[in-house]
Image (cartoon, rainbow, N blue to C red; front, side):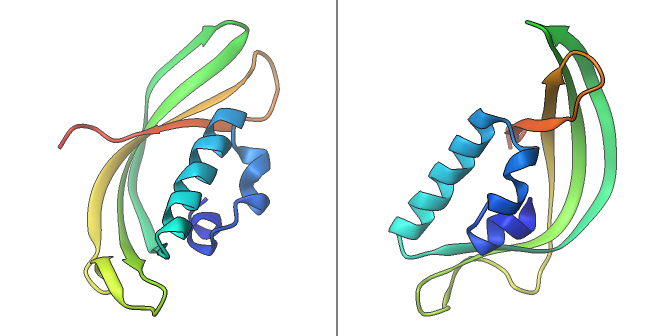
Length: 118
């Protein structure tokens, strides 16, 4: 996902996204493009991944995983100038990714990404 995000093209990962997630991420990328910016995510290091909940509803299996991650996350303008983040200092953060699939032996897709309140 980070490679598709950083390149501004989610085509290679779209099969792994729910329709709602694809629309949300495409909207975020369009907003960045309209501002003449690009967000880069590099050197992703997953420090831990833990299932926090799993359930079924409306004929779907869902599972939420808490990821603790370190990465380089920065935003550049059209000239390549750094406008946010750092190219050299890693950021540590936590995110909850919810994966969804139709009940049964089907492939999982990313359905939501949530960040806990700061």
